[in-house]
Amino acid sequence: MQQSYQLCCPCHFGLELTLCFEISKIGGTDIAAQDGRVLFRGNDLTIAKANLCLSTAERILVQLGQFPAYNFEDLFQGVRALPLEQWIGVNDAFPVKGHALSSQLHSIPDCQSIIKKSIVERLSSVYHVHWFQETGAVHLIRFSIRKNIVTIYLDTSGIGLHKRGYRKNANAAPIKETLAAGIVDLARVNSQSIVCDPFCGSGTLLIEAAWKAMRMAPGLNRRFQAELWEQIPQGVWREAREEAVSNIRHDGDFTAFGFDIDPKAIALTEENCRKAGVKPRIHIQQQDIGDFQPPEGAITICNPPYGERMLDIQHAQSIYRIMGEVFPADKNHPCHIITPDADFELHFGKAAHKKRKLYNGMLQCCLMSYFRDIQR
Ligand SMILES: C[S@@+](CC[C@H](N)C(=O)[O-])C[C@H]1O[C@@H](n2cnc3c(N)ncnc32)[C@H](O)[C@@H]1O
Image 1: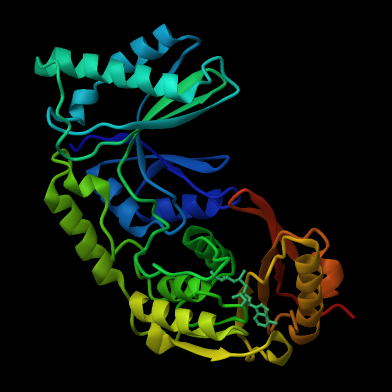
Image 2: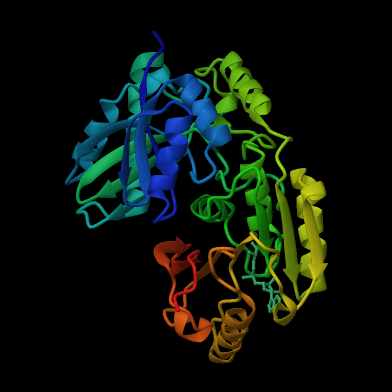
């Protein structure tokens, strides 16, 4: 029987349940949502599928151990007791990164160096060498210390999973791909949907919507750190990729429309859609929000300008008022708008039918959803 590991995916606050559902679809077990992350169990194949297929996970971590630590000795001994040689070979590199919160151990550089020394001591006793060249595959060790509990993880993803490979260039305020994927899921986009984004920027929401509709695994155009590890057989990655490719659907009628006032954003969206392989499904046009008319049955998804300085905020709010005039925001024209403005509904002129708290980076936002018949 294949070995089962405790796995952990950090995610945007508010997307935990979406991620739980995604994990259940790739065969993860013992799934448990916590604030900003989901824990689950799985084997080598689950690690490969998770990296390839989970659209709302930030990265896939193997949890190596967890223990209390109130001082450096506790930290050193706790790390030294972990079977690190199961993962880290004699030539492998093992950089250490992490964070601490509400704990006696709070100096990150000191914790980093204690953990590094402890790993060296553990591996020295196993490999009988005292100097590690670290010229092999990178096995990034991540630590988290919260309320004096240390958790040690191994990062299987490398570059964050939001990097899909289609958005090398972005406009000034792009939404993160993983958050966009979560919004698309909450908006219930499927293979037959018509989707509009009247503020498409670099096209992220449109591309994530198209990929979901076509069941395109978001990691198919990139590589992951653990693909270089001897500990996960190459055949496992091959199997996961072949399955992901065979799941892609080209038969649905999914279509999307992207608009933006800025011609540079239009060019960027076109380029990114081409790179993402969804250009034939997406129609892009320069247009001011005042001229927006959603097709019947289309789902509108957007992150309009936020505005950070006072003048920008007033401009953003005038845009919300125009949106209120041009978005029917009813059963036949559902719309989902992410905004940090607590008074959004006031400017838009309609109370949301559902509000979900979501974080765009450190910024607390709300996804305002409108999908019911107008109340008379
Ligand atoms: C927050 S950005 C959207 C980012 C986009 N979701 C992405 O991931 O790249 C807002 C966009 O609204 C556009 N915009 C600003 N005023 C507009 C208007 N009056 N009509 C249409 N688009 C407008 C900007 O050009 C910008 O691209």
